[in-house]
Length: 385
Image 1: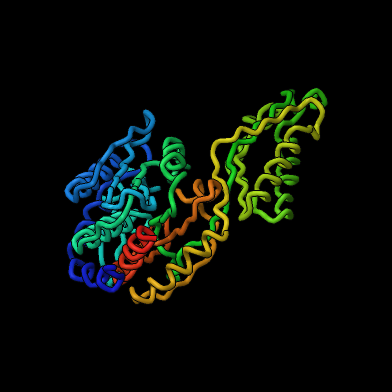
Image 2 (image 1 turned 90 degrees about the vertical axis):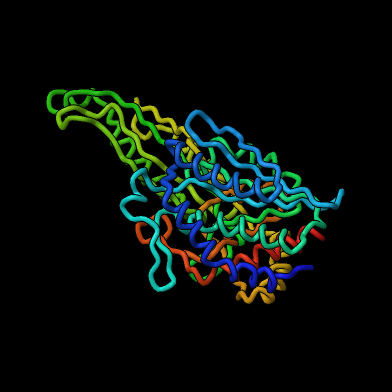
């Protein structure tokens, strides 16, 4: 066994090189749409992994999303566990952001669009694999690494890919950044997101309002009722309200966006079913409502598989010099799709960062080597089980 301590030492020796590469990819604008930037990022890593001797495949997304990078390493073990690592190349920041606030370092803190979520993590994963291979790591079965390009928009073209590649994995390691307190992620809420559309009947609000059926009034009633579903144990967020155009006309159209989140799949399913029941019934006779689901992720629940991975990670963390902490988070990731398939998942294994999706997003540079060592140690340990 190479061990996490040796991997950490190798990464510490290449810290400046790692930071230079992080700066390079952070300074490439890569919003989910358009796909020019995400393709540039995935192509960058394709070259890096190809140089390591991996089988590299660029898998087309949709006409809007970029090409997903699938990297496959085959070891000397004909029969060995399949370990699956996942990250994403897209960020939430629009084109032009990198020019406005490029990669910077101050007091060992790196800033820039997507530095923690998750370009720094993609780079550290690559260097962890380099460190393993340089130390003669070859007694493994199969290691798959997927860098997708649409995670920030709910994986419209990569979900099927994640599920297909990962369904037979012995473990999935999600290289999202560690939480601001250093914790890795052991569970994530599931979600259902869609648009509620209400149709009513227009009429003159002054002359004959009784002829109208207000879609706004109906929507307001439904929003209050749906918000109360939080009593079931999840959360409801309602945004994007719209209804009517002119003050003297009873609104015949109204809409809003609704997102449901819950940490248990049964709770999420129950709340979603109740939402649909509320939508199907009209408070104001003559109105009609419809909920159009746009996206969603199943819950990544803490389970026995998670517990086993955490016990393995605890041993490796000591060798890497990392204080192992874990906890839940409300946000979703690529890992949400694998947990329902029975795959053991650990998430948040990248360097430590915070203020994600904001102008103050940051990554702690002194976490690069220890967190990379934890990730590399997990890859090695799980590959020989």
